[in-house]
Amino acid sequence: MWQHRTPGIPDELFERVEDVPITKEEIRVIQISKARLSPGQIVYDIGCGSGSISVEAANQVGTSGKVFSIDIDPNAIELTKKNLTKFQITNVSVILGNAVQKISELPIADAIFIGGTGGETSEIVKLCESKLKQGGRIVIGTILVETLYSVLNVIEKLQFSSIDIIQVTISKSKKTSTGTMFLARNPVTIISATKI
Image 1 (tube, rainbow, N blue to C red):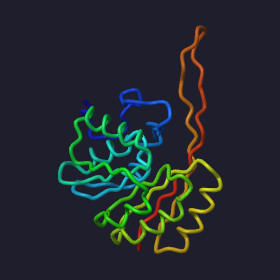
Image 2 (tube, one colour):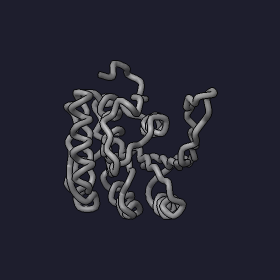
Image 3 (spheres, helix red, strand yellow):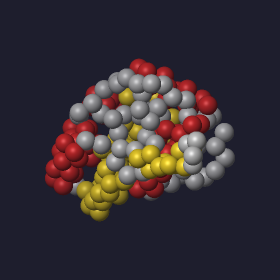
């Protein structure tokens, strides 16, 4: 379905449901680039939601790589599975459960994405640091200021270097009866870092 090596699958190509979030296309592109993925790598997508990051990451690591998608919400898991099927992705394992409990069962990762975590982001970052290879990348998307603050406190205490923080605000065009206008989306702060 997506015939390109570049990330940036349009949001409208993904299956969607009302209560399951999706990492929007432009944010996804930035997050994928911050992870610096290569074929054959092992990747976690924690708080996978709709599975959009999982699909994009799976395309980047190829069939020799593997993505582990985790979410505590059964609706998110079902939606992720639908999107994996839709995009004919076969190198993703989908895991229903609490990431705090499931991370220890996973193999060592080259890159980890952390999204919606139900308020346990700091604890998840700590657990992920021990499961990340030396030189591995962690990419965390946050919307709430409180989450950003707690993640930064944890990241600075752990074995991470090259800590990069960006805030992205996207406005998308929309046709109206009289022309084109821009609609702003919520700002997202993306923290990325490398394990020393």
